[in-house]
Image 1 (cartoon, rainbow, N blue to C red):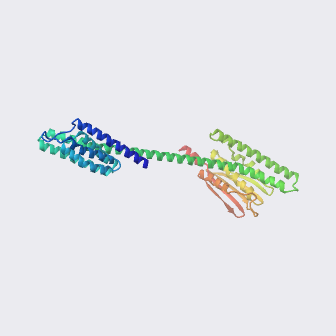
Image 2: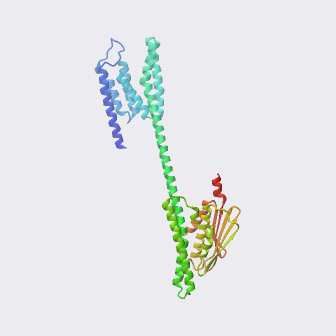
Image 3: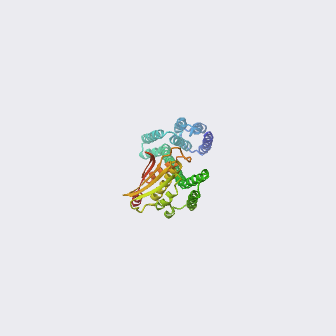
Length: 393
């Protein structure tokens, strides 16, 4: 800011010096008017208003109103001596600077004053010289010298303010676009994190629990070991397959292929692989499955998967019941697991419940989880026609 002020002061000084040189050239060429041949003001006396006007130009941007007040007496003195072309141009610049760099109200006030002054000049010249044509010429010259700079400054001010408003609007649009981009990136990151959590948590939890059972039970029979290893192998293979699918989608950057997504028809295998030695799982499906949108089917599968993962980690001994009901225009999911008494078998972060709720809310569905008697109940309702209605609209 301080550097800009120094640059502005230097520019005004150069303009004042150039105006003084130009004014001296004009005076040397007798570029002024004589009111009477008998009253010829000396050239040295004409230098006084010229010098005063040039000194006032040093304030044209730093203090434009003060510069105009300082220049006005010198301009009237020059008019009394006989108007000079150089001083008229310099005073016009003082009016221009005061109208442009001063307040808007100052420019409006100066416009009224200069209009009144031009009309007064026209009337005075007409009365003194007794001629309409001379009055029109005198008023026109006064208008060009006084009114035109004010009008020009007002037009330039309007253009600058409009350009500044457009610049601010463009910056605001750019900021909004950047905020939208960041929001989209955050939403995509959240979606990827939720998908990775659902893919990894279920399979790795099953692997960890069954491998712990094999290691902790020394007298486990061969059949028990085989069952545990089969669960470990199945969950490992499924987890790797889903990880490869997700990595492929991320590399390609395209939309997901619905055929590559896990489907509700595969819930039987998911439920069978979500059992412990002291916890069984059962699937119950009621109603005729309609043709579900891919987003609804994926969300329903992931909610069941995450609920079973939580059951593996935290449920007590007994049986986990998975119920999927197709009815009307909704898919209703209920997963009930016995409440554990000895605490969690594996640590949890709480992100599973958040992810299930987010999946339901994104589809305008309902979600609830909490104790229900001696069980922990996960309940979700997903509307089937929500996405179809959006496509139709």
